[in-house]
Image 1 (cartoon, rainbow over the protein chains, first blue to last red):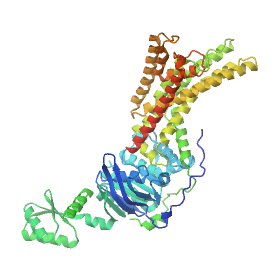
Image 2 (image 1 turned 120 degrees about the vertical axis):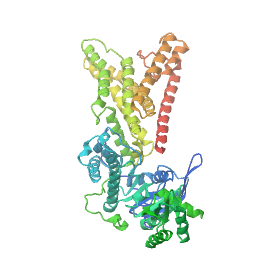
Image 3 (image 1 turned 45 degrees about the vertical axis):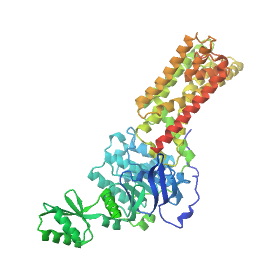
Image 4 (image 1 turned 90 degrees about the vertical axis):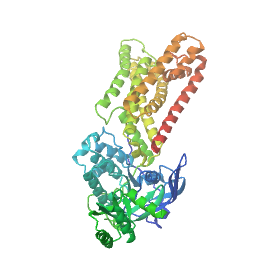
Length: 326
Length: 297
Protein backbone atom coordinates (compact mmCIF):
# COMPACT_ATOMS: atom_id res chain seq x y z
CA UNK A 1 0.00 0.00 0.00
CA UNK A 2 2.51 2.66 -1.08
CA UNK A 3 1.41 6.28 -0.73
CA UNK A 4 0.09 7.46 -4.02
CA UNK A 5 1.30 10.49 -5.83
CA UNK A 6 -0.90 13.51 -5.80
CA UNK A 7 -3.84 13.52 -8.08
CA UNK A 8 -6.60 16.04 -8.48
CA UNK A 9 -7.48 17.65 -5.18
CA UNK A 10 -11.16 18.15 -4.57
CA UNK A 11 -11.39 21.67 -5.98
CA UNK A 12 -14.12 23.54 -4.18
CA UNK A 13 -16.11 26.10 -6.10
CA UNK A 14 -14.73 29.59 -5.53
CA UNK A 15 -16.63 31.22 -2.72
CA UNK A 16 -19.15 33.76 -3.87
CA UNK A 17 -18.47 36.17 -1.09
CA UNK A 18 -14.84 36.72 -2.08
CA UNK A 19 -15.86 39.40 -4.53
CA UNK A 20 -17.89 41.24 -1.93
CA UNK A 21 -15.51 41.17 0.98
CA UNK A 22 -11.79 40.82 1.46
CA UNK A 23 -12.08 39.87 5.10
CA UNK A 24 -10.17 36.73 6.04
CA UNK A 25 -12.60 35.99 8.85
CA UNK A 26 -16.20 37.08 9.15
CA UNK A 27 -18.61 36.04 11.82
CA UNK A 28 -22.19 37.11 12.21
CA UNK A 29 -24.17 36.71 15.41
CA UNK A 30 -22.00 33.73 16.27
CA UNK A 31 -23.25 31.96 19.37
CA UNK A 32 -21.96 28.81 21.01
CA UNK A 33 -23.70 27.28 23.98
CA UNK A 34 -22.13 24.18 25.47
CA UNK A 35 -24.23 21.51 27.17
CA UNK A 36 -25.23 22.65 30.63
CA UNK A 37 -26.09 26.08 29.25
CA UNK A 38 -22.51 27.32 29.35
CA UNK A 39 -22.35 30.25 26.98
CA UNK A 40 -18.94 30.48 25.32
CA UNK A 41 -19.81 32.91 22.54
CA UNK A 42 -22.78 35.22 22.43
CA UNK A 43 -23.78 37.01 19.26
CA UNK A 44 -20.24 37.66 18.12
CA UNK A 45 -20.13 39.67 14.92
CA UNK A 46 -16.69 40.62 13.75
CA UNK A 47 -14.73 40.99 10.56
CA UNK A 48 -10.98 40.47 10.38
CA UNK A 49 -9.02 42.14 7.61
CA UNK A 50 -5.86 40.65 6.02
CA UNK A 51 -2.67 41.31 7.93
CA UNK A 52 -1.74 40.51 11.51
CA UNK A 53 -4.66 40.62 13.91
CA UNK A 54 -4.55 40.18 17.64
CA UNK A 55 -7.40 38.32 19.27
CA UNK A 56 -7.34 39.36 22.88
CA UNK A 57 -9.44 38.28 25.78
CA UNK A 58 -8.94 37.01 29.28
CA UNK A 59 -8.73 33.27 29.82
CA UNK A 60 -12.22 31.89 29.32
CA UNK A 61 -13.34 34.79 27.13
CA UNK A 62 -14.15 32.43 24.27
CA UNK A 63 -10.94 32.59 22.21
CA UNK A 64 -10.44 28.84 22.01
CA UNK A 65 -14.09 28.21 21.20
CA UNK A 66 -13.88 30.77 18.41
CA UNK A 67 -10.74 29.10 17.03
CA UNK A 68 -12.41 25.67 17.05
CA UNK A 69 -15.41 27.06 15.20
CA UNK A 70 -13.12 28.76 12.67
CA UNK A 71 -11.31 25.45 12.10
CA UNK A 72 -14.68 23.86 11.37
CA UNK A 73 -14.31 21.46 14.29
CA UNK A 74 -17.20 22.77 16.34
CA UNK A 75 -20.58 23.73 14.93
CA UNK A 76 -21.91 27.05 16.21
CA UNK A 77 -25.21 26.98 18.06
CA UNK A 78 -26.41 30.00 16.12
CA UNK A 79 -25.05 32.40 13.58
CA UNK A 80 -22.31 31.68 11.09
CA UNK A 81 -18.62 32.12 10.48
CA UNK A 82 -16.69 32.41 7.26
CA UNK A 83 -12.98 31.87 6.85
CA UNK A 84 -11.38 33.09 3.62
CA UNK A 85 -14.91 33.24 2.26
CA UNK A 86 -15.81 29.64 3.08
CA UNK A 87 -18.53 28.70 5.51
CA UNK A 88 -17.10 26.84 8.49
CA UNK A 89 -20.03 24.46 8.76
CA UNK A 90 -20.10 23.31 5.15
CA UNK A 91 -16.50 23.75 4.00
CA UNK A 92 -14.47 22.72 7.05
CA UNK A 93 -12.08 20.54 5.05
CA UNK A 94 -11.40 23.26 2.47
CA UNK A 95 -10.78 25.77 5.23
CA UNK A 96 -8.37 23.40 6.94
CA UNK A 97 -6.28 23.06 3.77
CA UNK A 98 -5.91 26.85 3.71
CA UNK A 99 -5.26 27.26 7.40
CA UNK A 100 -2.28 26.69 9.66
CA UNK A 101 -3.03 26.18 13.34
CA UNK A 102 -0.63 26.40 16.25
CA UNK A 103 -2.32 25.15 19.43
CA UNK A 104 -1.73 26.71 22.79
CA UNK A 105 -0.65 23.60 24.61
CA UNK A 106 2.25 21.25 24.14
CA UNK A 107 1.51 19.00 21.19
CA UNK A 108 4.83 17.49 20.17
CA UNK A 109 5.96 13.87 20.54
CA UNK A 110 9.40 13.73 22.21
CA UNK A 111 10.74 10.70 20.36
CA UNK A 112 10.92 11.88 16.76
CA UNK A 113 13.10 14.47 15.07
CA UNK A 114 11.63 17.82 14.11
CA UNK A 115 12.24 17.04 10.44
CA UNK A 116 10.35 13.74 10.56
CA UNK A 117 7.50 15.26 12.53
CA UNK A 118 6.98 18.32 10.35
CA UNK A 119 7.32 16.21 7.19
CA UNK A 120 4.61 13.84 8.43
CA UNK A 121 2.30 16.73 9.24
CA UNK A 122 3.05 18.20 5.83
CA UNK A 123 1.75 14.94 4.36
CA UNK A 124 -1.30 15.26 6.57
CA UNK A 125 -1.83 18.75 5.13
CA UNK A 126 -2.11 17.15 1.70
CA UNK A 127 1.40 17.64 0.35
CA UNK A 128 2.90 14.92 -1.88
CA UNK A 129 5.84 13.06 -0.23
CA UNK A 130 8.79 14.90 -1.77
CA UNK A 131 7.13 18.30 -1.45
CA UNK A 132 6.39 17.58 2.21
CA UNK A 133 10.05 16.84 2.82
CA UNK A 134 11.22 20.02 1.08
CA UNK A 135 8.69 22.26 2.72
CA UNK A 136 9.38 20.77 6.17
CA UNK A 137 13.05 21.65 5.80
CA UNK A 138 12.16 25.15 4.58
CA UNK A 139 9.61 25.79 7.32
CA UNK A 140 12.08 24.73 9.97
CA UNK A 141 14.69 27.02 8.43
CA UNK A 142 12.23 29.92 8.41
CA UNK A 143 11.53 29.51 12.11
CA UNK A 144 15.25 29.40 12.82
CA UNK A 145 15.94 25.71 13.36
CA UNK A 146 18.89 24.57 11.33
CA UNK A 147 21.07 21.60 12.27
CA UNK A 148 18.98 21.05 15.39
CA UNK A 149 16.18 19.82 13.23
CA UNK A 150 17.73 16.36 13.09
CA UNK A 151 17.59 16.05 16.86
CA UNK A 152 14.78 14.43 18.80
CA UNK A 153 12.15 16.99 19.84
CA UNK A 154 12.40 15.74 23.43
CA UNK A 155 15.84 17.33 23.68
CA UNK A 156 14.57 20.81 22.67
CA UNK A 157 14.15 23.86 24.85
CA UNK A 158 10.68 25.39 25.23
CA UNK A 159 11.58 28.09 22.72
CA UNK A 160 12.63 25.53 20.12
CA UNK A 161 9.45 23.54 20.69
CA UNK A 162 7.35 26.64 20.09
CA UNK A 163 9.24 27.09 16.83
CA UNK A 164 8.49 23.53 15.77
CA UNK A 165 4.82 24.17 16.51
CA UNK A 166 4.97 27.23 14.30
CA UNK A 167 6.82 25.32 11.56
CA UNK A 168 4.16 22.61 11.44
CA UNK A 169 1.51 25.31 10.99
CA UNK A 170 3.53 26.83 8.13
CA UNK A 171 4.40 23.62 6.31
CA UNK A 172 1.22 23.38 4.26
CA UNK A 173 1.64 26.93 2.88
CA UNK A 174 -1.46 28.35 4.57
CA UNK A 175 -3.23 31.53 3.56
CA UNK A 176 -4.10 32.19 7.18
CA UNK A 177 -2.34 31.24 10.41
CA UNK A 178 -4.20 30.83 13.68
CA UNK A 179 -1.72 31.09 16.54
CA UNK A 180 -3.05 30.37 20.01
CA UNK A 181 -0.88 31.99 22.71
CA UNK A 182 2.37 31.53 20.74
CA UNK A 183 4.56 33.00 23.48
CA UNK A 184 3.24 30.70 26.20
CA UNK A 185 5.98 29.50 28.52
CA UNK A 186 8.75 31.55 26.92
CA UNK A 187 11.23 33.77 28.75
CA UNK A 188 11.36 37.48 27.78
CA UNK A 189 14.06 36.95 25.15
CA UNK A 190 12.17 33.98 23.72
CA UNK A 191 8.97 36.01 23.64
CA UNK A 192 10.45 38.85 21.68
CA UNK A 193 12.13 36.42 19.27
CA UNK A 194 8.81 34.66 18.69
CA UNK A 195 7.02 37.99 18.19
CA UNK A 196 9.64 39.11 15.67
CA UNK A 197 9.19 35.87 13.82
CA UNK A 198 5.41 36.26 13.68
CA UNK A 199 5.75 39.84 12.51
CA UNK A 200 8.12 38.74 9.75
CA UNK A 201 5.82 35.98 8.60
CA UNK A 202 2.94 38.44 8.43
CA UNK A 203 4.87 41.19 6.69
CA UNK A 204 7.22 39.27 4.44
CA UNK A 205 5.60 35.93 3.70
CA UNK A 206 2.26 37.48 2.83
CA UNK A 207 0.31 35.24 5.18
CA UNK A 208 -2.53 36.68 7.25
CA UNK A 209 -2.23 35.87 10.92
CA UNK A 210 -4.59 35.83 13.85
CA UNK A 211 -2.73 35.75 17.17
CA UNK A 212 -4.79 34.89 20.21
CA UNK A 213 -3.36 36.15 23.46
CA UNK A 214 -4.31 37.36 26.88
CA UNK A 215 -1.37 39.75 26.90
CA UNK A 216 -2.36 42.87 25.05
CA UNK A 217 0.92 44.61 25.79
CA UNK A 218 2.74 41.86 24.00
CA UNK A 219 0.82 41.42 20.80
CA UNK A 220 0.08 45.08 20.26
CA UNK A 221 3.69 45.39 19.14
CA UNK A 222 3.13 43.24 16.09
CA UNK A 223 -0.54 43.61 15.16
CA UNK A 224 -2.25 45.79 12.60
CA UNK A 225 -5.65 45.17 14.11
CA UNK A 226 -7.04 44.04 17.40
CA UNK A 227 -10.19 42.20 18.25
CA UNK A 228 -11.04 42.13 21.93
CA UNK A 229 -13.63 39.71 23.25
CA UNK A 230 -14.96 39.21 26.70
CA UNK A 231 -17.42 36.65 27.99
CA UNK A 232 -18.07 35.58 24.42
CA UNK A 233 -18.96 39.04 23.20
CA UNK A 234 -17.15 41.49 21.02
CA UNK A 235 -15.71 44.22 23.17
CA UNK A 236 -13.99 46.08 20.45
CA UNK A 237 -12.48 45.60 17.01
CA UNK A 238 -10.26 48.33 15.74
CA UNK A 239 -6.89 49.24 14.33
CA UNK A 240 -4.03 48.96 16.73
CA UNK A 241 -3.40 52.71 17.00
CA UNK A 242 -6.83 53.63 18.26
CA UNK A 243 -6.76 50.64 20.54
CA UNK A 244 -3.53 51.27 22.35
CA UNK A 245 -4.28 54.93 22.80
CA UNK A 246 -7.17 53.90 24.98
CA UNK A 247 -5.04 51.41 26.79
CA UNK A 248 -2.32 53.85 27.80
CA UNK A 249 -2.38 55.16 31.34
CA UNK A 250 -0.23 57.22 33.57
CA UNK A 251 0.74 55.68 36.88
CA UNK A 252 1.23 58.19 39.68
CA UNK A 253 2.65 57.33 43.07
CA UNK A 254 3.16 59.64 45.98
CA UNK A 255 4.66 58.88 49.38
CA UNK A 256 1.72 60.46 51.21
CA UNK A 257 -1.54 62.23 50.49
CA UNK A 258 -2.83 59.69 48.00
CA UNK A 259 -6.51 60.38 48.71
CA UNK A 260 -5.89 64.11 48.58
CA UNK A 261 -4.30 63.82 45.16
CA UNK A 262 -7.10 61.61 43.93
CA UNK A 263 -9.61 64.29 44.92
CA UNK A 264 -7.54 66.98 43.29
CA UNK A 265 -7.13 65.10 40.01
CA UNK A 266 -10.84 64.37 39.90
CA UNK A 267 -11.50 68.03 40.48
CA UNK A 268 -9.25 68.78 37.52
CA UNK A 269 -11.37 66.53 35.33
CA UNK A 270 -9.34 63.30 35.13
CA UNK A 271 -10.99 59.88 35.46
CA UNK A 272 -8.61 58.64 38.09
CA UNK A 273 -8.70 55.17 39.57
CA UNK A 274 -6.90 53.76 42.56
CA UNK A 275 -4.99 50.51 42.13
CA UNK A 276 -3.36 49.47 45.37
CA UNK A 277 -1.04 52.40 46.17
CA UNK A 278 -0.96 53.77 42.64
CA UNK A 279 -3.26 56.24 40.95
CA UNK A 280 -4.01 55.42 37.34
CA UNK A 281 -4.91 58.27 35.03
CA UNK A 282 -5.97 57.68 31.42
CA UNK A 283 -3.40 59.29 29.15
CA UNK A 284 -5.18 61.73 26.86
CA UNK A 285 -2.18 63.55 25.54
CA UNK A 286 0.77 65.59 26.71
CA UNK A 287 -1.51 67.85 28.79
CA UNK A 288 -2.28 64.94 31.10
CA UNK A 289 1.34 65.07 32.30
CA UNK A 290 0.98 68.81 32.93
CA UNK A 291 -2.25 68.41 34.88
CA UNK A 292 -0.73 65.74 37.11
CA UNK A 293 2.45 67.72 37.62
CA UNK A 294 0.51 70.86 38.57
CA UNK A 295 -1.78 68.96 40.92
CA UNK A 296 1.15 67.37 42.73
CA UNK A 297 3.01 70.69 42.89
CA UNK A 298 -0.04 72.60 44.19
CA UNK A 299 -0.58 70.05 46.95
CA UNK A 300 3.16 69.95 47.66
CA UNK A 301 3.16 66.15 47.76
CA UNK A 302 6.30 64.02 47.51
CA UNK A 303 6.01 62.49 44.04
CA UNK A 304 7.94 59.25 43.72
CA UNK A 305 6.70 57.78 40.46
CA UNK A 306 5.20 59.09 37.26
CA UNK A 307 5.27 56.62 34.41
CA UNK A 308 3.42 55.71 31.27
CA UNK A 309 1.95 52.23 31.41
CA UNK A 310 0.17 49.89 29.16
CA UNK A 311 -2.71 47.91 30.43
CA UNK A 312 -2.80 44.22 30.39
CA UNK A 313 -5.95 43.29 28.68
CA UNK A 314 -7.70 42.30 31.90
CA UNK A 315 -7.28 45.84 33.20
CA UNK A 316 -8.54 47.26 29.96
CA UNK A 317 -11.67 45.20 30.36
CA UNK A 318 -12.10 46.34 33.93
CA UNK A 319 -12.01 49.92 32.69
CA UNK A 320 -14.47 49.27 29.91
CA UNK A 321 -16.76 47.60 32.38
CA UNK A 322 -16.57 50.41 34.89
CA UNK A 323 -17.27 52.88 32.10
CA UNK A 324 -20.28 50.84 31.07
CA UNK A 325 -21.64 50.92 34.58
CA UNK A 326 -21.21 54.70 34.92
CA UNK B 1 4.30 47.17 10.66
CA UNK B 2 2.98 45.46 7.60
CA UNK B 3 0.65 46.97 5.11
CA UNK B 4 -2.38 44.74 4.71
CA UNK B 5 -2.51 45.48 0.99
CA UNK B 6 1.11 44.57 0.51
CA UNK B 7 0.74 41.47 2.60
CA UNK B 8 -1.97 40.10 0.37
CA UNK B 9 0.03 40.11 -2.83
CA UNK B 10 3.71 40.85 -2.74
CA UNK B 11 6.13 38.24 -1.56
CA UNK B 12 9.43 39.68 -0.58
CA UNK B 13 12.54 37.79 -1.38
CA UNK B 14 13.23 36.09 1.90
CA UNK B 15 13.22 32.65 0.48
CA UNK B 16 9.62 31.90 1.33
CA UNK B 17 8.11 29.95 -1.48
CA UNK B 18 4.47 29.42 -2.07
CA UNK B 19 3.20 25.99 -2.98
CA UNK B 20 0.79 25.96 -5.88
CA UNK B 21 1.23 22.35 -6.89
CA UNK B 22 -1.30 19.55 -6.46
CA UNK B 23 -2.63 18.71 -3.04
CA UNK B 24 -3.84 15.33 -1.89
CA UNK B 25 -7.50 14.96 -1.14
CA UNK B 26 -8.88 13.67 2.11
CA UNK B 27 -8.90 10.04 0.95
CA UNK B 28 -5.23 10.16 0.02
CA UNK B 29 -4.30 11.85 3.29
CA UNK B 30 -6.05 9.05 5.16
CA UNK B 31 -4.19 6.54 3.01
CA UNK B 32 -0.88 8.24 3.82
CA UNK B 33 -1.72 8.12 7.53
CA UNK B 34 -2.65 4.44 7.23
CA UNK B 35 0.63 3.63 5.50
CA UNK B 36 2.59 5.62 8.09
CA UNK B 37 0.81 3.76 10.91
CA UNK B 38 1.25 0.38 9.22
CA UNK B 39 4.99 0.97 9.02
CA UNK B 40 5.18 2.04 12.65
CA UNK B 41 3.27 -1.13 13.64
CA UNK B 42 6.47 -2.94 12.66
CA UNK B 43 8.73 -0.23 14.06
CA UNK B 44 9.77 0.93 10.58
CA UNK B 45 10.74 4.60 10.62
CA UNK B 46 11.21 4.41 14.38
CA UNK B 47 14.18 3.61 16.59
CA UNK B 48 15.84 0.22 17.03
CA UNK B 49 13.96 -0.47 20.26
CA UNK B 50 10.62 -0.15 18.48
CA UNK B 51 11.59 -2.97 16.12
CA UNK B 52 12.49 -5.61 18.75
CA UNK B 53 9.03 -6.92 19.61
CA UNK B 54 7.64 -6.94 16.04
CA UNK B 55 10.71 -8.85 14.81
CA UNK B 56 10.63 -11.37 17.68
CA UNK B 57 6.90 -11.86 17.17
CA UNK B 58 7.39 -12.52 13.45
CA UNK B 59 10.19 -15.00 14.10
CA UNK B 60 8.27 -16.81 16.84
CA UNK B 61 5.11 -17.22 14.83
CA UNK B 62 6.97 -18.43 11.73
CA UNK B 63 8.94 -21.15 13.56
CA UNK B 64 6.24 -23.87 13.34
CA UNK B 65 5.96 -23.22 9.60
CA UNK B 66 9.67 -23.91 9.12
CA UNK B 67 9.52 -26.98 11.36
CA UNK B 68 6.62 -28.19 9.21
CA UNK B 69 8.58 -27.64 5.99
CA UNK B 70 11.43 -29.66 7.45
CA UNK B 71 9.11 -32.46 8.64
CA UNK B 72 7.24 -32.66 5.33
CA UNK B 73 10.53 -32.82 3.44
CA UNK B 74 11.38 -35.90 5.48
CA UNK B 75 8.18 -37.60 4.42
CA UNK B 76 5.77 -36.73 7.23
CA UNK B 77 2.28 -35.36 6.58
CA UNK B 78 1.59 -31.65 7.26
CA UNK B 79 1.82 -31.08 11.02
CA UNK B 80 -1.23 -28.84 11.56
CA UNK B 81 -4.36 -27.48 9.90
CA UNK B 82 -4.17 -24.13 8.15
CA UNK B 83 -7.27 -22.96 10.00
CA UNK B 84 -5.70 -23.37 13.44
CA UNK B 85 -1.95 -23.23 12.76
CA UNK B 86 -0.29 -23.56 16.15
CA UNK B 87 -3.20 -22.41 18.31
CA UNK B 88 -1.61 -21.60 21.68
CA UNK B 89 1.42 -19.99 20.08
CA UNK B 90 -0.80 -17.86 17.88
CA UNK B 91 -2.80 -16.59 20.87
CA UNK B 92 0.36 -15.68 22.73
CA UNK B 93 2.12 -14.00 19.81
CA UNK B 94 -0.95 -12.05 18.70
CA UNK B 95 -1.55 -10.87 22.27
CA UNK B 96 2.05 -9.73 22.67
CA UNK B 97 2.00 -8.04 19.28
CA UNK B 98 -1.17 -6.03 19.86
CA UNK B 99 -0.20 -5.27 23.47
CA UNK B 100 3.06 -3.75 22.25
CA UNK B 101 2.00 -2.21 18.96
CA UNK B 102 -1.55 -0.90 19.50
CA UNK B 103 -0.20 1.57 22.09
CA UNK B 104 2.52 2.47 19.60
CA UNK B 105 -0.21 3.48 17.15
CA UNK B 106 -2.60 5.34 19.47
CA UNK B 107 -1.20 5.98 22.95
CA UNK B 108 1.82 7.95 21.76
CA UNK B 109 -0.33 10.52 20.00
CA UNK B 110 -2.65 10.75 23.00
CA UNK B 111 0.26 11.14 25.39
CA UNK B 112 1.90 13.97 23.49
CA UNK B 113 -1.43 15.64 22.58
CA UNK B 114 -0.68 15.54 18.86
CA UNK B 115 -4.33 15.04 17.92
CA UNK B 116 -5.27 18.73 17.62
CA UNK B 117 -2.64 18.92 14.87
CA UNK B 118 -4.37 16.10 12.97
CA UNK B 119 -7.84 17.50 13.49
CA UNK B 120 -6.79 20.95 12.25
CA UNK B 121 -5.91 19.34 8.93
CA UNK B 122 -8.24 18.37 6.10
CA UNK B 123 -9.39 15.05 7.52
CA UNK B 124 -12.55 14.30 9.45
CA UNK B 125 -12.84 13.24 13.03
CA UNK B 126 -13.42 9.57 12.30
CA UNK B 127 -10.59 9.34 9.76
CA UNK B 128 -7.84 9.12 12.33
CA UNK B 129 -9.14 6.04 14.20
CA UNK B 130 -10.14 4.50 10.86
CA UNK B 131 -6.60 4.84 9.51
CA UNK B 132 -5.18 3.35 12.72
CA UNK B 133 -7.62 0.45 12.58
CA UNK B 134 -6.89 -0.41 8.97
CA UNK B 135 -3.16 -0.19 9.68
CA UNK B 136 -3.25 -2.55 12.66
CA UNK B 137 -5.58 -4.95 10.86
CA UNK B 138 -3.17 -5.08 7.93
CA UNK B 139 -0.20 -5.58 10.25
CA UNK B 140 -1.96 -8.45 12.07
CA UNK B 141 -3.00 -9.95 8.77
CA UNK B 142 0.62 -10.01 7.69
CA UNK B 143 1.69 -11.52 11.01
CA UNK B 144 -0.93 -14.27 10.85
CA UNK B 145 -1.04 -15.07 7.13
CA UNK B 146 2.67 -15.13 6.30
CA UNK B 147 3.32 -18.27 8.45
CA UNK B 148 0.38 -19.93 6.69
CA UNK B 149 1.90 -19.12 3.32
CA UNK B 150 5.28 -20.43 4.48
CA UNK B 151 3.55 -23.62 5.64
CA UNK B 152 1.83 -23.87 2.27
CA UNK B 153 5.02 -23.36 0.26
CA UNK B 154 6.94 -25.72 2.55
CA UNK B 155 4.29 -28.40 2.09
CA UNK B 156 3.76 -28.18 -1.66
CA UNK B 157 7.53 -28.10 -2.19
CA UNK B 158 7.53 -31.76 -1.21
CA UNK B 159 4.30 -32.55 -3.05
CA UNK B 160 4.66 -35.31 -5.63
CA UNK B 161 1.89 -34.29 -8.00
CA UNK B 162 -0.57 -31.58 -9.00
CA UNK B 163 -3.34 -33.24 -7.07
CA UNK B 164 -1.42 -32.73 -3.82
CA UNK B 165 -0.93 -29.04 -4.63
CA UNK B 166 -4.65 -28.62 -5.30
CA UNK B 167 -5.57 -30.29 -2.00
CA UNK B 168 -3.18 -28.01 -0.13
CA UNK B 169 -4.62 -24.92 -1.84
CA UNK B 170 -8.16 -25.97 -0.91
CA UNK B 171 -7.07 -26.39 2.69
CA UNK B 172 -5.20 -23.10 2.75
CA UNK B 173 -8.03 -20.80 1.65
CA UNK B 174 -10.28 -21.29 4.72
CA UNK B 175 -7.15 -20.86 6.84
CA UNK B 176 -6.52 -17.46 5.28
CA UNK B 177 -10.16 -16.60 5.98
CA UNK B 178 -9.74 -17.47 9.66
CA UNK B 179 -6.60 -15.30 9.75
CA UNK B 180 -8.58 -12.39 8.32
CA UNK B 181 -11.22 -12.87 11.00
CA UNK B 182 -8.57 -12.81 13.69
CA UNK B 183 -6.96 -9.65 12.32
CA UNK B 184 -10.27 -7.79 11.96
CA UNK B 185 -11.43 -8.56 15.51
CA UNK B 186 -8.16 -8.44 17.43
CA UNK B 187 -7.06 -5.11 15.87
CA UNK B 188 -10.32 -3.55 17.09
CA UNK B 189 -9.96 -5.07 20.56
CA UNK B 190 -6.33 -3.96 20.84
CA UNK B 191 -6.91 -0.39 19.64
CA UNK B 192 -9.95 0.36 21.75
CA UNK B 193 -8.18 -0.87 24.88
CA UNK B 194 -4.94 0.97 24.06
CA UNK B 195 -6.77 4.22 23.33
CA UNK B 196 -8.09 4.30 26.90
CA UNK B 197 -4.86 5.80 28.14
CA UNK B 198 -1.96 7.86 26.84
CA UNK B 199 0.42 6.09 29.17
CA UNK B 200 2.04 3.49 27.05
CA UNK B 201 3.01 1.07 29.79
CA UNK B 202 -0.54 1.10 31.14
CA UNK B 203 -1.97 0.64 27.66
CA UNK B 204 0.27 -2.37 27.07
CA UNK B 205 -0.74 -3.77 30.44
CA UNK B 206 -4.45 -3.26 29.79
CA UNK B 207 -4.30 -5.00 26.42
CA UNK B 208 -2.12 -7.90 27.59
CA UNK B 209 -4.03 -8.53 30.80
CA UNK B 210 -7.43 -8.28 29.11
CA UNK B 211 -6.47 -10.77 26.41
CA UNK B 212 -4.65 -13.26 28.64
CA UNK B 213 -7.01 -12.99 31.58
CA UNK B 214 -10.18 -13.54 29.54
CA UNK B 215 -8.50 -16.39 27.69
CA UNK B 216 -7.40 -18.03 30.96
CA UNK B 217 -10.82 -17.59 32.55
CA UNK B 218 -12.47 -19.05 29.48
CA UNK B 219 -10.08 -22.04 29.39
CA UNK B 220 -10.49 -22.72 33.10
CA UNK B 221 -14.27 -22.60 32.80
CA UNK B 222 -14.18 -25.03 29.89
CA UNK B 223 -11.99 -27.41 31.90
CA UNK B 224 -14.25 -27.03 34.95
CA UNK B 225 -17.24 -27.94 32.82
CA UNK B 226 -15.62 -31.13 31.63
CA UNK B 227 -13.19 -30.04 28.94
CA UNK B 228 -13.54 -29.31 25.26
CA UNK B 229 -15.21 -32.61 24.45
CA UNK B 230 -17.88 -32.12 27.08
CA UNK B 231 -21.37 -31.56 25.77
CA UNK B 232 -22.60 -29.61 28.79
CA UNK B 233 -24.05 -26.18 28.06
CA UNK B 234 -21.49 -24.63 30.42
CA UNK B 235 -18.56 -25.99 28.46
CA UNK B 236 -20.15 -24.96 25.19
CA UNK B 237 -20.70 -21.32 26.15
CA UNK B 238 -17.59 -20.84 28.32
CA UNK B 239 -15.67 -19.97 25.15
CA UNK B 240 -17.64 -16.76 24.88
CA UNK B 241 -15.55 -15.22 27.65
CA UNK B 242 -12.49 -14.81 25.45
CA UNK B 243 -12.14 -13.16 22.03
CA UNK B 244 -9.76 -15.94 21.00
CA UNK B 245 -12.25 -18.65 21.89
CA UNK B 246 -15.05 -16.70 20.22
CA UNK B 247 -12.94 -16.67 17.05
CA UNK B 248 -12.28 -20.37 17.41
CA UNK B 249 -15.95 -21.06 18.08
CA UNK B 250 -16.90 -19.22 14.92
CA UNK B 251 -14.30 -21.22 13.01
CA UNK B 252 -15.80 -24.50 14.23
CA UNK B 253 -19.32 -23.26 13.56
CA UNK B 254 -18.31 -22.39 9.99
CA UNK B 255 -17.03 -25.94 9.47
CA UNK B 256 -13.49 -25.98 10.85
CA UNK B 257 -12.56 -29.50 11.88
CA UNK B 258 -9.03 -29.29 13.28
CA UNK B 259 -8.78 -29.17 17.08
CA UNK B 260 -7.85 -25.59 17.90
CA UNK B 261 -8.42 -23.72 21.12
CA UNK B 262 -10.69 -25.44 23.57
CA UNK B 263 -13.86 -23.84 22.29
CA UNK B 264 -16.54 -26.31 21.33
CA UNK B 265 -19.69 -24.37 20.54
CA UNK B 266 -21.84 -27.28 19.36
CA UNK B 267 -25.28 -25.92 18.48
CA UNK B 268 -24.34 -22.58 20.09
CA UNK B 269 -22.29 -21.78 16.96
CA UNK B 270 -24.59 -18.98 15.76
CA UNK B 271 -24.35 -17.43 19.23
CA UNK B 272 -20.56 -17.27 18.80
CA UNK B 273 -21.08 -15.55 15.47
CA UNK B 274 -23.45 -12.98 16.97
CA UNK B 275 -21.22 -12.31 19.98
CA UNK B 276 -18.21 -11.94 17.68
CA UNK B 277 -19.99 -9.38 15.52
CA UNK B 278 -21.29 -7.52 18.58
CA UNK B 279 -17.82 -7.45 20.12
CA UNK B 280 -16.38 -6.04 16.91
CA UNK B 281 -19.13 -3.42 16.68
CA UNK B 282 -18.66 -2.46 20.33
CA UNK B 283 -14.90 -2.05 19.90
CA UNK B 284 -15.18 0.02 16.74
CA UNK B 285 -17.98 2.11 18.21
CA UNK B 286 -15.94 2.64 21.35
CA UNK B 287 -12.94 3.69 19.29
CA UNK B 288 -14.97 6.21 17.30
CA UNK B 289 -16.55 7.59 20.47
CA UNK B 290 -13.13 7.87 22.10
CA UNK B 291 -11.88 10.14 19.33
CA UNK B 292 -15.01 12.21 19.18
CA UNK B 293 -14.30 13.08 22.79
CA UNK B 294 -10.62 13.79 22.25
CA UNK B 295 -11.16 16.24 19.43
CA UNK B 296 -13.47 18.36 21.50
CA UNK B 297 -11.11 18.47 24.44
